[in-house]
Amino acid sequence: MPIRQVILHRLKMRLNDPFTTSFGTFQDKEFFIIEAVDADGNHGYGESVAFTSPWYSEETVETTYHMMRDFLIPLLQEHSISHPFEVTKLFSPIRRNNMAKAAIEGAIWDLYAKRNNKPLAEMLGGNKKEIDVGISIGIQPSIKALLELIDKFVTQGYKRIKIKIKPGWDIDVLREVRAHFPDILIMADANSAYSLEDLEHLQQLDAFNLMMIEQPLAHDDIVDHALLQAQLKTPICLDESIHSLEDARKAIELGSCQIINIKIGRVGGLSEAKKIHDYCMEKKIDVWCGGMLEAGVGRAHNIALTSLSQFTLPGDTAGSSRYWEKDIIEPEVIVKDGIIRIPDKPGIGYEIDADTMKKFTIATHAFQL
Image (cartoon, rainbow, N blue to C red; front, top):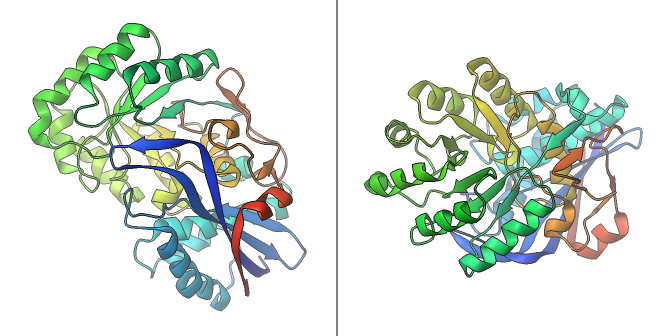
């Protein structure tokens, strides 16, 4: 792959509404669009997903930029690659920093698919024409506001509702939600807000027929989750604990979860995400694709990944209009009756809206390879 240039576009976009989880509230999303350009004039795009503060993981927008500029791009300058699978090995001397790695690898995957004139989903081995999608709802100012939002998204046809919870905003909230919506698919996302001391409290979740509870315990734990899962009927889904295929293997062998949320940025890229998917298929573990409030490029990568067959549960890849007044891709991601059609154009299948991206760009850095 004759990559000749990598361009880092730093953007700042405002979400339509503030998004609140157990670890904080924010409305402005700052991130990078990574553009990889080859000698033939093809352009591949990736997106970074780290936040400005290290609340979801240790990575931030600033650390992502530092790693890409000072370590990852120099590795690309020093070595040639022929396939995106080689990027994981090339970047392996750098510990962790998975979101920085995934951002660059995503651009290379898109470029590779375009060079082969095939959709990214097909290049990854996907076999779906469309995917079911759910919606993620942050912590709301009142239960009434939450119920109104759920009703709105159920009416729009979303296949699953994810509700953020934390101590003090959990059992009573879910009881009300289930009473108003007895038949919809509901999951609860704790973002590591509990400990084993909350066992009896968490056992109350079994009354609500939830699809799953996502990451109830510590962000780096798989041992205590195994102890908790043995005491819950509700399936546990691991998110923050899974950074690699090896993490997934250990969690499954320990019985720490029944479901895994695969996020491209968290696991270091599409290549590692596919490995985790394949292993979970072998072990008959359901997987789904979580979101990081991505703009259109990251959303497109999630759609391509979800085309793989073991993504059996609706993911968080909502339509562009859920989060952005104007997205940076054309066409924008559209959800109809809870379904997204997988694009059949080369690469990610969406074009960059150059004027909109320029409007939100606050800095640009170009590197020659």
